[in-house]
Amino acid sequence: MSAGGELDGLYVYAVVPADFDAAGLGTGIDGALLELVSAEGVAAVVHRHSSSPYSGDDEEAQRRVLEHGDVVERCWDHRRSVLPMGFNVIVAPGPDETAEERLVAWLADSAHVLSERLAALAGLVELRVEISLDERVAAEQSEDVHALEAELRERPPGVQRLLQRRLTALRERAAERLADRLYPEFRRRLAALSTDLAENVRGHPPAGCVTVLNVAVLAREQDIPRIGAELGDIELEEPAARVTFLGPWPPFSFADVPHSPSVEWTA
Image 1 (cartoon, rainbow, N blue to C red):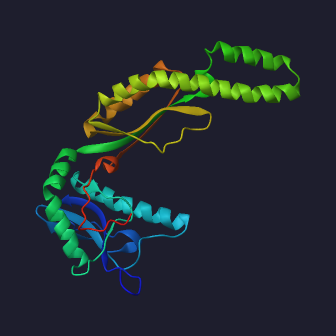
Image 2 (image 1 turned 60 degrees about the vertical axis):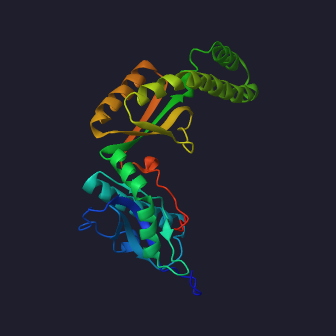
């Protein structure tokens, strides 16, 4: 960091094979020109960054996150072999090194691991699968729910409001019990068609639903129709099931990029 608060650094979007053709990649965040920094058979897609990590209001931040993702997707479309980096990963200069020298050193030190990971992910895509249960439908077989529904119809309006809150909680608990029973089976069925799964711990179900599972799926592109068919079968078998199936994308959740003390990762 300079005395003026500015960085003479490199913003990193992704790691790709060193023979990657950067021509036609276009620009990155805020129209920044993209280039490659290479070492030992791997390369980083970067732009020259002369400011602090990106910040701003929600709309501006969202735009920049999308522009970051667009660069990763263009790399992936071009080669189908990419290790995406997270948003706001910046290599800063050291006391006696430029940012490029530090990035080259990190690439060289990590080249073996990076090359292995690029090879392992080549041709694979990330999908997002969320299976949730509609609480009303999931609770249809609950005797407790039916009993409370019957009681609610016979009570005056003031009491009905109190019973309605109890009914909502009862439906939710019934749906959660069903979700717990279904989770191992649904996860097993997805795992059988994919290379890897990663739980999305920050996911939120739709209103009136509980989550069975919310995962990122790593799979071969040719297996996407089979995964879609399996999810269709799940919806047919379980009336309460609500399925969201998104993608394909680059393998954002499965990059497993090694960090190194020789590089400042500011995320």
